[in-house]
Length: 257
Image: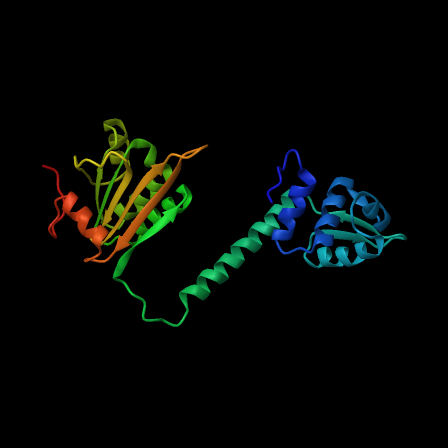
């Protein structure tokens, strides 16, 4: 369940702290101390759902992670770190975990992984589609052909195209306005334009190195529209073959007429 951080700040804060692997009592204690400024175990217990005897265990957990300071008075006083300090600590922890994760995945024993993807794969949700596009941009060796209207040339995608351009990848774009093409051309060293038309219902068409492709459509549903995509990889993949045929490719790159 997602809590609104403005209308339900306590519940939202506790839920996020639990996501960062704090126990429920520790999360409730930290939220209570953030509101109190400083407090004793009795103070914390009175404004939270943490039994007084369990506040000490929660504080030990928080103190070990550097989230609470303890004053050795009688009774003991506790103080939570500031929200900015908390953010820096969790940001650093998240980056470390991601670093360990990516290193571990990159060092897995190689398996007999298929490069030729005979099937067609689906991607749901616009953010996931952009992630897949950026991944394809980053893996491009020779050529990227991307057709989309202006709204589908977001800054992160333009940055991804610029990075590919810096590697010497040929960039061919279509579907965008002349103004946006001029803006992108100012950032990339060489850009070709293609006039190939997208099918009316298709939002994006991508072909990378003549062997990986992606096509997306926007589905109208009650509420906001949802973008979904299909992609395929491999020289004989059916989706790749279809898009190469649409672009008029027979193993050769597209160039300006």
